[in-house]
Length: 276
Length: 303
Image 1 (cartoon, helix red, strand yellow):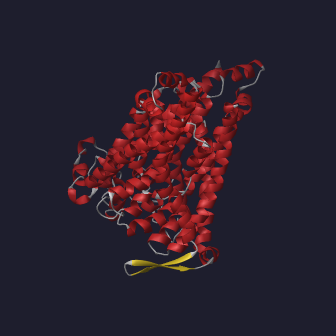
Image 2 (cartoon, rainbow over the protein chains, first blue to last red):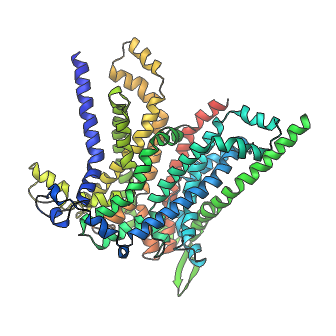
Image 3 (cartoon, each protein chain N blue to C red):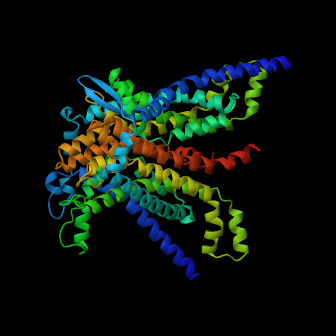
């Protein structure tokens, strides 16, 4: 009985410590983003709630700062990357799962291995080619490059799902005279909408958060939110509140998506990574 | 009947080709070609001549440079240190978190949400967040330690070489634990509960159950976690870019950052590509381990 009590005591303590450590830094960032600079630079820091203000947010969204256009660019790029990735990726995933492609297992392993290339290896030649074709600093260029890491994930997740679609369903369609394309279009796709949508959300988060390719392949016109924040934190090092406000703004959409679609991320993607 | 089946299968095969073509074209353009080109570039000397580029065969000189330059050796050493410590720390912490969340007391959805927040956070936002926490004058870390009476004067966390590297490591570990914990949680839930029951019937205590049931059951998950985390640790960039830009005295430069700087700041494209290829080789070996770890199950399921 006492042992049981002790176990429970330590567990509760551990869970509390875990929650504090995981959320503490984030909560701290949100709280301090709502305080004026004078409060942040007081010693000790002045946490008087009377000082709470959204001034930092208004200032960073000013058009001269590049964050607002950065958020829009990130949105456009993430949206198109996930949309194109879903269309191309779902077709390839279906082919690998159900259309008797030769060596489909080997192809899948290769696709998975592509996840593990360091971005720097591909970005140096891509930068040279894209400078010559004037694709640097365009939405199109960045979207294409983002497909290099989005597409493999999409194919991997959706292939697993398509395999779970009962074979009988497709056989029945074939018996009724449906061509393979019609089967895919009218039978498989409609029942796959939830996982398709959820995979799209996952791709969106990944594309939104990307930084490394963006810093190399953008200059002025398509700076993403991440780039705007990094530049801001380099230029205005001492405007702590504004720095944090921009970080919070760029994180809200993805954190919200992750929480809303947590069931899928937990069951679909995470398990997919450990089960081939 | 036979013929229609054949025809149907042929149609399926043709559709399969059509369906895989776009993905293959994209992946060839943005993955296969650049990987090949980067190998070629590493044997060239690339110069920016006016508007264009000039290429000149440079033999193995870029790779010889690697061995000669101290900064590369230091960056390689630091990358290995960073990766080893990060993997050990992340695996242990993530396993602890996963075990807690797998216990009936930790099953609530609330803790899953807690895990997802650091994971989903934009990496640059994460970097900015830690820059603020580590701030020497106003950062909460110094204030908390001073409040507890542990330090007398402010520590400049990102100001001295070894310390700065370890603070970056700390920020990266914080960001990495949640995803690996989620992987392990999924792994734990795949261990059949009758194994625990059987172990208890045999009189195994909690620790013995952990060693003889949990750890063997988690073997694949552990291998995959170690490989994925090593790869991610070798790729670290955002944190260095925002927190230190490699300072003080180039002491926080890791391989990925070095390759980027040589290529895009110093415009030494061939040398940068050579560094990138070393990184690639390291990761490729890790990727092979990952694939090997996944494979046995696949064969079992097909058979």
